[in-house]
Image 1 (spheres, rainbow, N blue to C red):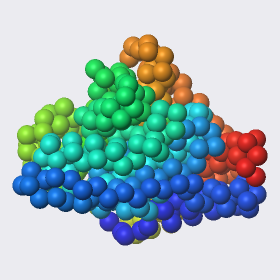
Image 2 (cartoon, protein in one colour):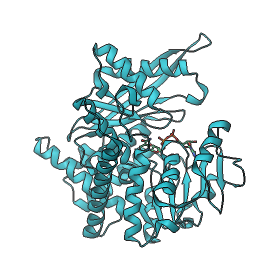
Image 3 (cartoon, rainbow, N blue to C red):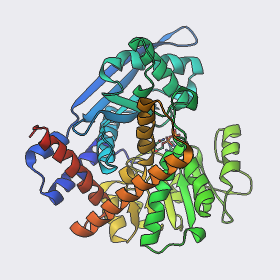
Length: 415
Ligand code: NAD
């Protein structure tokens, strides 16, 4: 993958939006940088008795519209600039979905695949011990992201509750059901994405029952994207991948069987009756819908001319570089931009917070209906804005979101 700085990408996207909106330069100046960032060192006792020091971050980008919210990523290649970019995108995402929240993101440089459960628990608790003063149910609410999961959220919630001296379920979302989690959070990112894809397909006249789909990444976002493609709309999944490589089947894959195979072997590769395919080639397949659901900067100026999909639905954050965006737009590819397409996760996270405050929990049907409504309204506001300004869908999504954040800053008297 190209070594592009994701925060520079995020800033360039904002700069482009500022031109389209003729944004006040004072507003633009504030929105180009995070309002606060924490850098912490976390000494952890490893199972072999040694002490290893991990670097952690929390970036709170903008809270004009409400408490900040954003996931925590555990990844060996984590950088402060990735966290800054993700925090910026969270700000736009929450504004676009009209959630009463600002944007934040966290991360720890570590390789969870090489750590024991005990080491991961100590790291998760240490992270909260370092940042607890700066987070809270009405300040900044973390959630899962790449290589963090409901169990890690439960440890973090528990640590924060111990420090607070009372249960504080609302401090973190993406928790397991028994400790204040919400039904429907597990597949929310992919489900929200599919509600958007359904609308895009209507707009460009694609019959989803006959559509073919390729998914890059087979974690939370990618697996559920494949599962829901088949179960909700009857699409055919022809290729999926993970860090170790990809698999292709013209006849179509069974997402459940692939998941079981990955659980047993650690990867989707070598799934019976499939052909191997590289992550790069997967992106260039002749499919109706391509779903990047892994990491940033995978669709670049180099491979964008070779993308044959009619719809690119970005479940990953930042999978497409600004140069690639231009090429896809020129080639008539319909891009459902990341902070619209993958906003289902934060939307159901927001529902989880609301239920925690309420102490009353909704059923799955209610969650799905509320999510569908939010995603559909957001999609149409982006589509209408793209027509109004004659800009692509990402620029339109920025225009809607940035206008809302700028308005809140103005009302509050910040500018
Ligand atoms: P995850 O940890 O559950 O899964 C990540 C998957 O990506 C794994 O299958 C991994 O093998 C694969 N992967 C990692 N590096 C890869 C590479 N270089 N090439 C191919 N595959 C690779 O993470 P997730 O929660 O599914 O997140 C995936 C993306 O979706 C990220 O960009 C994340 O920010 C975004 N996202 C997730 C959520 C959520 O609720 N989980 C919400 C919004 C956005």
